[in-house]
Amino acid sequence: MFNFKNPFLCCQLVLLFLISNQVFAQKKINEDSLYIRKHYTKIERQIPMRDGVKLFTSIYIPKNASASKTYPVMLNRTPYSVAPYGEKLFKTSIGPSMHFARDGYIIIYQDVRGKYMSEGDFEAYRPFISEKKSDKDIDESSDTYDTIEWIVKNVEGNNGKVGTWGISAPGYYATMSAVEAHPALKAASPQAPVTDWFMGDDRHHNGAFFLMGTFSFISSYGAPRPVPTTKGTPGFSAYGTPDSYEFYKKLGPLKNVNEKIFKGENRIWNQLMEHEVYDEFWQSRTPVPYLKNIKPAVMVVGGWFDQEDLYGPLKAYAGIEANKPKSPNLLVMGPWIHGTWSRGSGESLGNIRFGSKTSHFYQKDIELPFFNHYLKDGKDHELPKAYIFETGANEWRKYDQWPPKNTVEKKLYFHPDGTLSFSPTMSIMQVGVKPSFHEYVSDPAKPVPYTSEIRIIRGSDFMYEDQRFAASRPDVLVYESEVLTEDVTIAGNVFADLFVSTTGTDADFVVKLIDVYPGDAPNDSPVNPAMKMGGFQLLVRGEVMRAKFRKSFSKPEPMVPDSIENVKFDMQDAAHRFKKGHKIMVQVQSSWFPLVDRNPQKFVNIYKASEEDFQKAAHRVYTSGMNGSYVGVRVVE
Image 1 (spheres, rainbow, N blue to C red):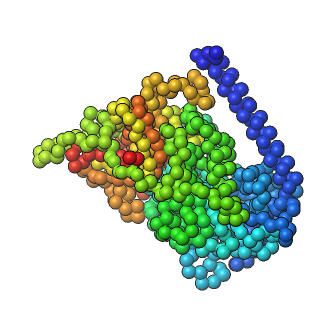
Image 2 (image 1 turned 90 degrees about the horizontal axis):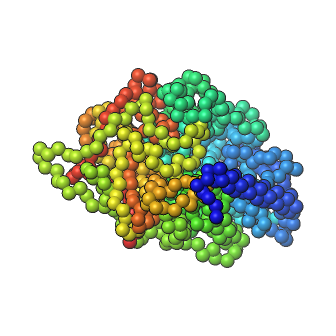
Image 3 (image 1 turned 135 degrees about the horizontal axis):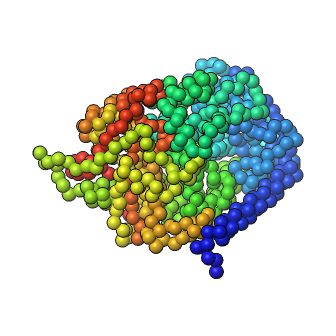
């Protein structure tokens, strides 16, 4: 029997596990690469768009494709490069998964306009033009239309049916492919699609700027590209420390990024800094208003632990659904971080096990049958409207709508004694009776860290990390339920409804919904057998709200000092079972650094704020009567 109390032995077992996984992964890569070279021919073409701009396209065609032996097309449009370049250089894996290559598909990748080897100017999430008056009026929908038109006429052996897919930004392009779609486009799968860079994807959440991920990503993504090239621009690397908390504190206010590092040369960073509110710039870039009359079948995919784009898939699906499409519109949500349904096994994240190889199941039993049905006239995929993985229970659920019908909205009330329950505080607001509250001081000079790890790149671990490191801070409020006597399952939207006051004129409020494991929880971490799981605080959902946007994201208003105000915000959806014997916890704080930039706690344009604008502020969260704060969830009955 292994002695897991021996740290050295534990380290050796973890190392052996990692090495064996790497060996297996490399073997699979080699096998896939050999299969592609044996069965596929690669050609490269510059496809002309209606305005004359040519887009570089890499095309993998089955070697036996012909007029009599035809295959459907899978198209991926990307700003991240179709590399490797050269007709004799092949990707080591092609398609959404290698199931597609082995099943027989023409698989095509395209550098989007203005990126890598494609001509033209790049625009991050180019606005859609609903009324095109000339061939000069182009957008991502028209570029996809023109690409498909060229493919069906020029690629030998295609059967006239096309599917699109993509993850993250390519997911956005998949969304746009379905808007005013080419008749040959029969199925589209936006996966973790970027849907709104201000409201909840990547760059901002509820108006709060996601500093750490944005800085590192945009340092490369927004760099100038004067001419087509096969080489990308390296991202910023001169951090000088492995500690992001230290680096971003020393960097200071956001305006210092341009003054010290980008020097005004990064166009996308400049756009971010110029549009602090939800103005026309942002509103014109979300595809949601145009998700009408969608004709291709759509399968939107996302991950419950996606560190970048959880908002996108939920809002893209809802946007299509709201317009009652005649074609199928499906939603798949699994226990994944960004894009891991397409790679790895999906058995676990960090210390959390999911009980099965969820990614393999998705690729083989969900994704491939979906496209085969619409592109190959295959058998009915028999997929439900919503295929949802319920974390906590570690089970897949099939629903005929999302959120499911059998749910009711309930409120997790904060109580004056620090407890949390579905019953409101019994005290009633009366004239002359002071409301109950909990107060903490938020100091921008000592913000709450987003993780307990020392790391310079954001990563994804914070999405499923043990939250005990934050619970012990004096500037974090904690509300905890009694031990659950029966399972509580939530499925659908989670939102925070806070009654707060501050001594400042602005504030951020971060709310975390947490599953607290019992003290005798088994030590079954897949990455660290010595990890003590008793009392583990699993982050189920966490979100931030910049309070000046509490009434309008387009027209911010200052908080009135010492005045009770309502701050209500979307925390995105969840599907989770809090098991009997566990507890439910909510944490409230006012910084999440450097994941989110620091709020000066003064009503200013934060992108132009100076060091002198940052100030301490005392925040109160109210817990009684008409001003009782709570987190809303949808409970399965």
